[in-house]
Length: 228
DNA sequence: CAGATCACCTGCTTGC
DNA sequence: TGCAAGCAGGTGATCT
Image 1: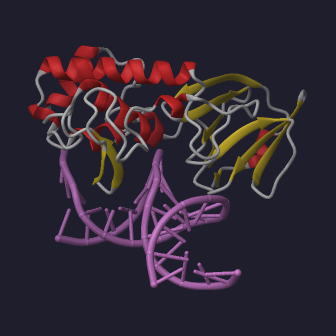
Image 2: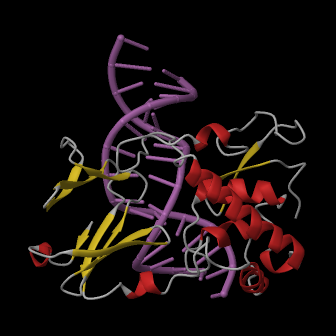
């Protein structure tokens, strides 16, 4: 949960805050780096009440930044530079261009869905958005990446961007407890086309959405609209 | 390299 | 009614 020396944060100024895939990275005035991951249920909240799930607190000039995390999958790391395993992740899902995305996928023989979840292949995509993007592109989650045509991979790249953009605009997906820094829930869960909709009608063909396991992860898709 | 399996953790749902 | 089992999922270790 915590790596590094929290005492080294005393008196530091946060020079920059940026996103690196699913990681939140803060550059400090000392030159060191504070890297956070919210895991499944992590929240960063400013000046809110502490709860039983408050795992860390950062005292700021403006108040207090709290790290809340029910399931404790979140991580906080203080280090001299961005940790190597984080720096080595694949290109960002919202920054990679279609040609690079397709070319990288063409060399991989794994199923497309676990590949999308592999942060060393592409950083920033999680289970909900992988399912939604594959539906948007009409690609079966078990399709072999390298066997997909370049045009279908480009379509998938486009679907990933669209899915993430729309989700960000809607403030994210609040399935159980996600909230933003102001404690506000997102609404994208109301627009999910397949995720969490097992048995419900496909918005495109009306057939039932199916739920299967792919690489041990719950996977939602339309067997009629999504082809290998 | 690919993928299976397990572990971490706790609130919630399901089933008996 | 009550309790146990199962499930959710991001990362990471370990094994085949």
